[in-house]
Image 1 (cartoon, rainbow, N blue to C red):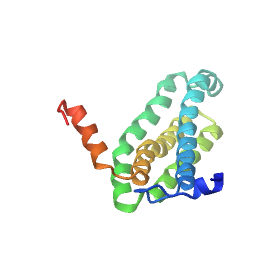
Image 2: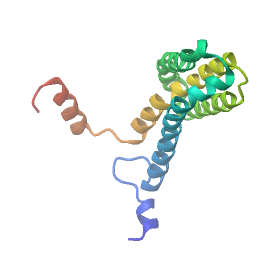
Image 3: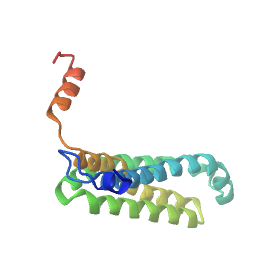
Amino acid sequence: MTLRERLAHQPPGYNFTIGRILAIYVGLMVTLLLAALDQTIVATALPRIVSDLGGITQYSWVFTAYMLTSTVTVPLYGKLGDVYGRKNLFLFAIVVFLLGSALCGAATDMTQLVVFRALQGVGAGGLFPLSLAVIGNIVPDFPLINKSFNLSYSGQDL
């Protein structure tokens, strides 16, 4: 069996071919890598950024604004994804996150940086929950696996 045939194969119970599933997983991984790299880079570079922009009094607000808006928007993205669909909402979250990132790079003072990090957090709040929801949509429901998983966490036997 050639690679092309393997990628075109649709396993029983799945709605997508193996190639399509792999492409979706790669897209989700790249998105989550982007968010993780952002946090790592900002944490490392923030002391230098603050010294350049001259706002030591607002230092903690850069993280607080991001974390506050991303935490608040997680359940909103979850509910809106259920109501309006996950794909377009996921793309919206990516665009808002990237727009916030670009604006953070263009910030000329600490107030702008804090506001743009808050905007970036609004986008970041949708990246993780919608990624998990997309995975839940493409992986079929296997009742025995779900039952054993649920029972193992409730302390019961099969």
